[in-house]
Length: 203
Image (tube, rainbow, N blue to C red):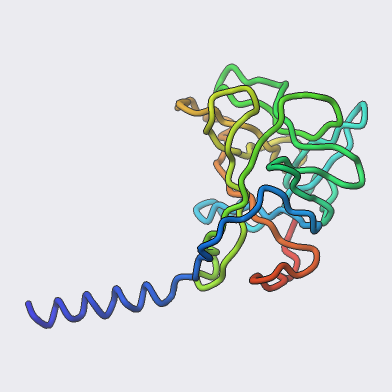
């Protein structure tokens, strides 16, 4: 029993040493330096390590997809918790295309005054490289609605996935088009202090 205890302590220490160091100071609500957004869900290799693309829609709106649809962008910023896309002058909002099956709603970008999707930059450990610190955009909520829920992606046309909002307290699933919960990770166009610049991944 004594030796088993020592082994457990050693194993625990090794695990702790393998984890990244989370800075104590919180991050500000805005990120002015341009970045791209990496999509993570380590349990779902079909979406893990992909990126958020923009796809021009009517009226100047930009719809959001995982490739092959859309264009990979390195020009996102965060303004008071809201994702903005510099070239199009648009910001991330939630609204439209509500699904009666799983009660999800579309996440897209517009210059209109639709209720915003609000995020909080948060330090976390990279699930692919546990010693590496990354900045995640933790979803706070849909402006004007109860806080909580998450961002998910579901299959769309031409082998792509579209981004959607899954509300708090919801347990509905569309078995034909499951909306998979994802984490959005900031990958800076230029180096951000404390994070190394990462090579490109698939769109």
